[in-house]
Length: 239
Image 1 (cartoon, one colour):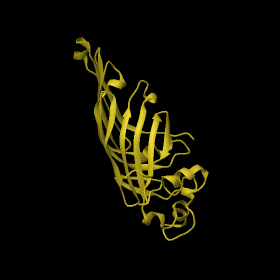
Image 2 (cartoon, helix red, strand yellow; image 1 turned 30 degrees about the vertical axis):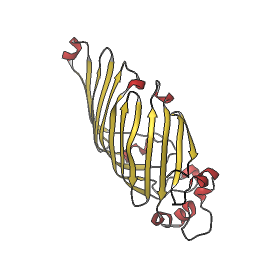
Image 3 (cartoon, one colour; image 1 turned 30 degrees about the horizontal axis):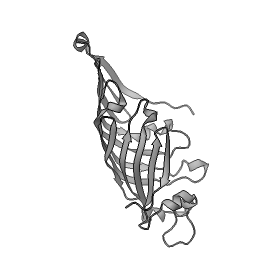
Image 4 (cartoon, one colour; image 1 turned 90 degrees about the vertical axis):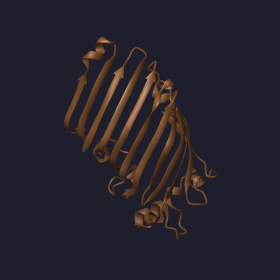
């Protein structure tokens, strides 16, 4: 389907004085998606530097551009990204990511997952993402969401490579779907199973998903392999 986006205002400026010193510095920004995006990119002979600040950007505006198979999502993004690439190489990158997606959610009760059931809105609360890069290794700090419907956490690292698609995952994630969501309606009961029901949940029909479930109700996964082709394996024994 054809989609449109509207950007209320956008700018880009090249600073002339740094050019005389052999440095290209471009500042840019836009008012779009309900918020603002501002940043500065500079390039010297031996390094690139990107600083980016996001404020009040609503992810719901991007839904029309997601793949048809993707689950709709939303939330308001605020935060900063700051990276330096010595020799313009990702494997030497230093910097940080500090983002918060407030009132985040997935599903809208309309879009169907793989053409089957429509996932009712699942409230994730504030999704927090912090990470720090040191010489090309991006180590996750805090990656959590603890909303009314889902408890989620991730830890680990991403070893960055050039091109980025060759970067390597070494991460672990766990999540728990709260009983209040599982019992919300007939759809959620069918997908995730009612706590007092003996009927198997559709979500656990995949043997790997069932294997990933821990005794405390969390689903636990190990993510490894290349960024372009990640491998997800159940890791139910990890605490």
